[in-house]
Amino acid sequence: MRSLVDFSHLNLLDPLGAKALCGFDLVFYRNVSIYFDADSRKTILNNLHGAMNDTGVLLLGVSETLANDLGIFRLVEEGGSFYFAKAAASPPPAVAPKRPPPKLRPPGKPEHHAVRPAVVPRPAAGADWASVIATMRALLRAKRYDEALRTIRALGASADPRLLLLEGHVRLHMRQFAEAAAIGERAVAADSWSCDAHMLLALAAKWQGDTAAAIRSLKVIVYAKPNCWPAHYYLATLLHDLDAAKARREYAAALRQIDADPDPDGGLWLPLDLPVADIRFLCEHHSAAAEASTPRQGQSGGP
Ligand SMILES: C[S@@+](CC[C@H](N)C(=O)[O-])C[C@H]1O[C@@H](n2cnc3c(N)ncnc32)[C@H](O)[C@@H]1O
Image 1 (tube, protein in one colour):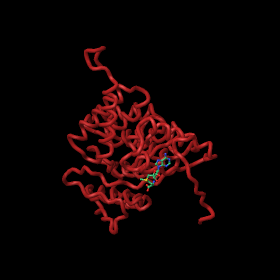
Image 2 (cartoon, helix red, strand yellow):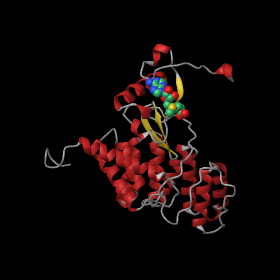
Image 3 (tube, helix red, strand yellow):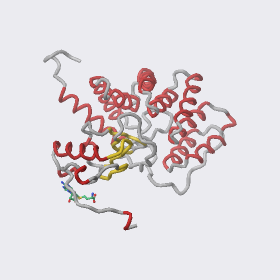
Image 4 (cartoon, protein in one colour):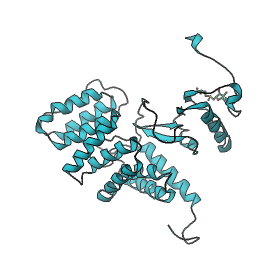
């Protein structure tokens, strides 16, 4: 093992090329940025950016990630974890995120376990949907995707459209985006106002890099279900580089809805199981940052 590892000293503020450091796929830069002011953080992020491959991923410590969202790397949220991607467009293919336990939890929701549960509750065949959702939530957290699909198939005799939605949701977790999109299309054809179906379509489009299609589906959701905070949040992230003012409004809307009801599923039927506390922090950060750089109403025209 020792023979495979190179050790060297460096000053992160110096260009890394001078030390012939380049071609990194993954950089762990943890618990270091806390020592630096914003200008030094930018210098270091630019140095790391230059030393990484195009599909490279940068990981910081939990408490410092958002303070390094300085427009140099792209902040990506996936499965409840945040990381920085060098690539501007679609995310790198495979990162296995470990989900942190959310700090906000509405009453009545089950506790969140990042580890594989010892016993996964079996759904009762038939119509006990609360039990089915609890089972799917546990299986998805444990990344037991094949078992999740088998569970859905075992319930398939009733051919309930909700099983279709669940399968699409599992396919999203498995990164089978085309399959998830096809299932989303079928679900929307069966019920054009199903917010769960539109969320499936939106997330499949988002992960396939089809921003326009993702925005279209999310707009249907915020129209049909204005208190669905994940729809506002995803809209904000997609609008971030397209229309800063609209993105700010969507971040603010997501923040208001989270504060009204911090449901990790955003009021949808599907177990989205999102990290509410982290996303709330992000929404607060982006709506406040934009507010600070936006002229006040009455000074040079309103929104
Ligand atoms: C709190 S320690 C974190 C170490 C390790 N990443 C961890 O999480 O355990 C911070 C480290 O940053 C290093 N450091 C501070 N300024 C640096 C700079 N300009 N260039 C390189 N390393 C630096 C310090 O030497 C120290 O080892």
